[in-house]
Length: 296
Image (cartoon, rainbow, N blue to C red; front, side):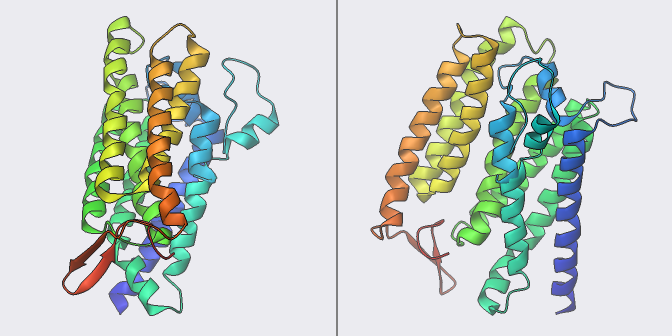
């Protein structure tokens, strides 16, 4: 019981750490370090890579799962900085998950605690990534993103069937972001990130987002993963369109977004109307449901 109490405290502390550094470096740049030091989205603006993202859409993903001005190289008003802070939906959903740790419903508490270790590690890796990313240590930042990808993938396959309040904020939301962030940061990390060769590789690797999303939609009927990746694909597509209208990358990104969204709807509508896929697993006598197909 004492260990559970300690895990709850660690969960809250690491989550606050993750939120605070993300919000702080959205508005402020670091003042230490030898390499270029920029705000989170200023780093995104500084490199016209094949995976450069639109601030508004990417920020909405985080803070409701809101945002920053998507317009390139223009003066920003205080209201645009307010929008920039809007990465808040995913963090809000994670706050809801933490609230369930203190629920009076023992089943919900046990379910929330069962993924707590992975969530704590995710928060620490996200903290490390932000601290390194804003200081232009992109190789080390990539290292921690990959470690978090391993952590979250392990979490997904160990707990694929938990209900909404766990699955979206703790599993599929962070995992979808981490997959895209590997390319986002990796495209900045490579030499000559704005070169033709880098963009050609970007044109190829962006299709892995579609393959990755379809895997979870088809195998696990996980419409949250499909929706999350479609939103992030839209963030890439919008940014690439504003960068260069005559180019393949934004077209590919919007095609991927559309395909993932359609696949998501095909799975989500039957689930929402009660005609969901009866995808039930049994492990150790306990029935585990596929993500989000039944109760909250």
